[in-house]
Image (cartoon, rainbow, N blue to C red; front, top):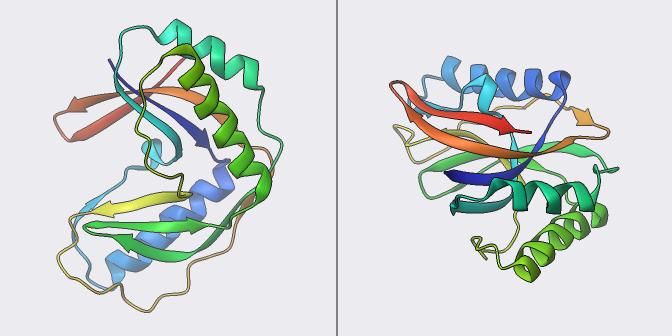
Length: 162
């Protein structure tokens, strides 16, 4: 199973991310847009791992987050355009706690530094993000979830494992 741990924003924040995507589409940007049902913020990418119950125990031991996800502008990493998330100490501490527990349990994960963002699209047809003003949104207490990633006919399908 291809797994990752994510924060799932509330519907109002998902709506705002989708509005940002609509602005990019209206500006003529083509690419592989993240579907509404796949909008999330990755805390730890685990990759291929066949023991989700071990990760669920870790996630439960860390508790539900009690901080906010606040959208903050757009940016890019190579061929990924994203909606930024305003950094806050509690979010970084929560991500660090989860990663430390994964490490302690011997669960492999991608050790790239945590960089809070929500992917808007991949492989855009241009290099420059158009000048848009994304809507503001705040999720007060996002849901932390273990997600499974499967390749579907029309892209990736993310499913929460409970």
